[in-house]
Image (cartoon, rainbow, N blue to C red; front, side):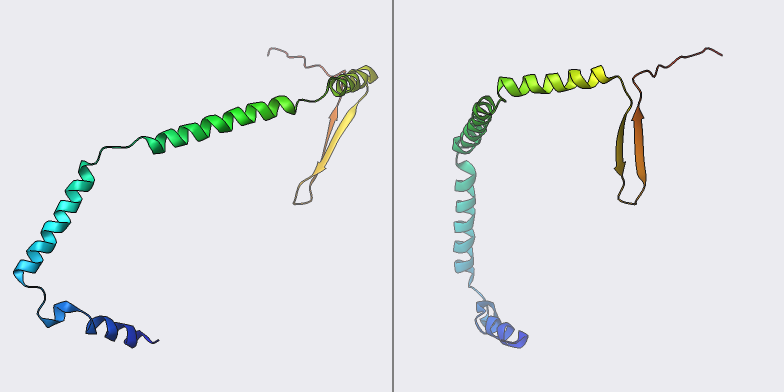
Amino acid sequence: MTTYDWRARLQAGDPALDGGLDMEAAAEMRRRILTAVHQAAAQPWLWPRPLLVAATLALTIAGGAAAGRQLTPPADSRATTRAAVKGAEALDERRQLQFSTPGGTRIIWVFDPQFTIKETMP
């Protein structure tokens, strides 16, 4: 369908081209519209929507808390992690953290456990 076709169809069905509505029909239409607007404004604010949102939020938080209790790691894995940290501290040697940026720059951080900061006053 071309642009001309749909515009021609709209213009062919337009009652305003034939002289429009008479005053009585226009007044009736205006009265009905204003009545509908006043009825919509007079309806009280209903609480089901805010209550539904609050209930959904409460259930989501409760579900997350219940899932968090179920997903706690077993006691033996926490003990293994603590032992690994104590073992690393006992080594007392330098460690490195190496990574490269997307641009290709390599960054190497050396962690020295014997390093101390000595400040001097000028």
